[in-house]
Amino acid sequence: MDDEHTAGFREPCAQCSAVDWGVSDEGRFYCRSCHNVIERTREVVETTFAPGSTRVSTIGRGSRNKRPEGGRQWMICEGFQFILRNQADALLRLGVAPHFKRGLDSDSDSMAESSVKSASETDGEANLSSTVGSNAASSSDWSQCSGSVDVVTYLSARLRRSRGLMSMKKTLALIHLGLVWSQEPLTLSDLLRLVNEGHVPYLNAYENLPDEMRLDGRDAVIFRVDSVPSHRAVHTEAQDLALYLQLPAFPPVSCQSLLHPALLSVRYLTDANLPDELHPWVCSLMERAGMADQTLHTFDSTTRPVLPRYDAQSAAIIIVTLKVIFGLDDHTEWDLSNEVGVQDNSEDVFNLRRWYRLMQAALIKAQSRRDHDIARKQWKAKKPLYLNRKMKTTVMKKKRTAEQVQICFEKLSSHLVGVQHCEPSSFRFCWGDEDGADGPSLHHKKLDKVVTLKRNVLTPSNSTYWHPALQACDPRKCRSHYSEVEATLPRSFVWTLQLFSFLLDVKPAYLYEEVLTVERRVFGGKTPLNGNMRRKGRTTRTETRTETRSGTRTETRSRSRSETRTPQR
Image 1: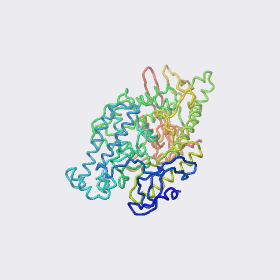
Image 2: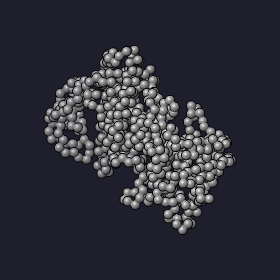
Image 3: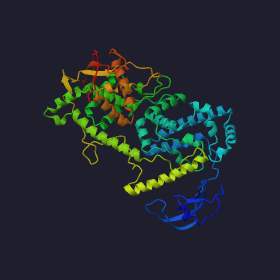
Image 4: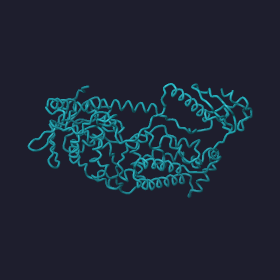
């Protein structure tokens, strides 16, 4: 159909001298041989269902906003600073306090200086101007299609092996460090969820760079990303950055801070539709594990060079609390649920079987909705980047084909292809009686029967606690044994791991490691360790007694025996 629209235009292309014109979806003429776009346009009056069957009314010379031919010369670190600024502005629009951006600016400036210094040292030059000159001279061909003058040096083998270069993953790490420094109630899992939902620019963040900063060629290797990094990858990058930049000690995370597990656990208890009466037991376990101290949750490069995983740590404490009270061994929790069911006031008492059925239905629905949104998400950029000029022709052709197929699907399904963005929220589920809720709220339920009063002390009815062998492995040699022991773990415990993993959008193995860390702090010092984590089916059962008075006090009497579990599905 392009031949009909361009039949009256026989001028040769200024680039390749070919006479083979086509019309793009925007109505502009382009050379099919070299993809050179000229100013000649067509005006579209009506479009029909079938792609390409557009009716042309007139062909004329329309106005066109041309980008600068050469743009301006700019450094790679400048592009990352623009991206960091856009990410910070997006968080400010979502309600983050303004002082967060001031702390982020100092971190990004330090990282930019480090990147420029590394590039200068690699080039063998002492100052920035000589570095720019040498790079521009050695890569004149690339500077014609890209304004970045240090792309060749930035991609050198020696510099890429160093840790001083900025990257897209480091932008999220710096944002996370800024949020922790300002003690904003936004965890790393929240940040990654906002990125996945498109509220914080990341995947195609380069599209928002100024027009004079032209990206093409080898810039694609640096600024183009195809996926959002995992929780573990960003956390590791943030910790390495904090040590590399030699950041001073972070402000202390006290019990009043919303990042402290004492308050952060309230949010996860609410999202998981667990009763409010569980929170004192969570705090009691935290005291027992020695995890209420603020120094444990405050990063200091000299005294405590470990960046806490606040979200995973809080979820792990809740899971260990559920194991203490309900057992989660495929037997105890269902026996307690049967005892609650025969009570006269069973409607006011928390029943774990009813909670499981309610959460399982909501979880399946939420997972299906998430998978559906991922399938409908538009991953391709509106302004694609090309590694070389030969690839540009193929990429543009694929882009036009994809747009035409998208138009067909929209016509056939009567729905927009893209994901319908909703308002961001810190919660995965909504509990209550209003319309659109995922189910009735269980927050007001009581823990009768599972917690009894013995000698004026509240004590869990469950007197045993099981756990895998708590012997720590060398992190340099192995990372996780969850895949090996998953088949031998109780199904109720595995399901609980999967539930909180969905809330945090992490892998169950990642959360399982944090649960083991909490259990080592609670039981590791007093419970004999039998077996090895590599041996399947080895668990330890510990007899516990947890008491709560006006304050909280927890006692543990340990006796261990190794037993082989048969998973009950």
